[in-house]
Image 1 (cartoon, one colour):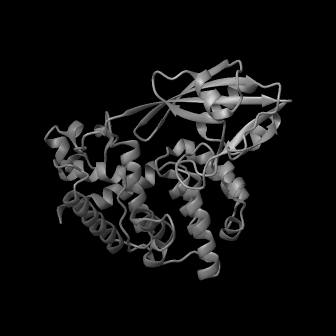
Image 2 (spheres, helix red, strand yellow):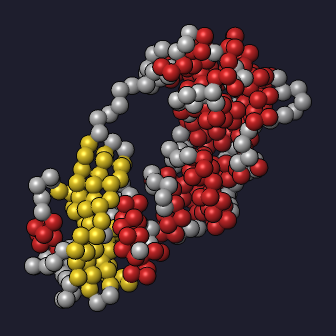
Amino acid sequence: MRVRSIVIPLLKWFSENSRDLPWRKTTDPYAIWVSEIMLQQTQVKTVIPYWERWMKRFPNITSLANSNEDELIKLWEGLGYYSRVRNMRKAAKDIVEVYGGKFPCDLKHVLSLPGVGRYTGGAICSIAYNQPEPIVDGNVVRVLTRLIGIEESSKSKSVVDRLWSVAADLVKHSMSLNKSKQRNASSFNQAMMELGALVCTPRNPLCANCPLKGRCIARKKNKVEIIPVMPKRVRLTKRRFFGFVVCWRNKIFIQRRPRLGVNAGFWEFPNWEVDTTAEAAHVAKANLSLGQVDLDPLCIINHSITRYRNRLEMFVIESTEKPSLAKLNGQWISESKLEGLPLTSAHRKVVNKLIS
């Protein structure tokens, strides 16, 4: 297969150009698993300090399995997609109970862990155990579609299946070249991702620096900028929210989100989604049982979650009598304790405004 000719130059390029990342200094499957979960939807430079703090606090599977969920969420705060960290805790408990605390070493059992899919399973098995299991993430998709010159949607089933098939053949071929007992499966898979991250970038790729430039069909056809072919973007939806920092006797009311859904279990100030004609005073009166109160505008936080563009308008309410907020799942705490709670990213920004 002609595409196999990329393996040797790519391995050479990786040995000379790979980034010095902390999780590349170990073959511990637990540490590699943590890095791979954190790297989902998150840039490397953001993940590094999180990974280092995590490994210091939870250095092994047992410590993670025995962790407190609030502390875990607090440690993850800012990375987003919080179902990832909850699944990690569930998986750690499974590893302790089913595998005696030892991370499973075959793909079938790795894939049985909560939150571990085809890509993550392949990454763990290849990087930690040097097994010839393929991986296909966004970087690999970009490298392979340009290399092969695929002009169909990169999300179509036929293209996805083809990319996984090519990736499987390449990583297995890398092992057949392993005469010096090097960790070629691990290095090759990491090299594919590294090339996509550093050279074969989504925009303005550094084709002149690419070790595969002579083999790239997209470059030969001058179609690098239009490959991979992406599906049409989902239309963005704007949403508006009113939120309230309710204060009484040097205490602030904070509520907890439900255990299911987006940002499950995180803390935030009372807030409600409203339409474009809503007035904050009416929303406060209807939902907080405060009667007539003065609203002091605090800030406006614009933030995005997937396809939603949210506008959060925050107000401070100083109450002279203790409000009856029994219908809300929350508690009264001092301002100093807000810092220690796991807060949603938007409401963390509100806290920063509040105490600045």
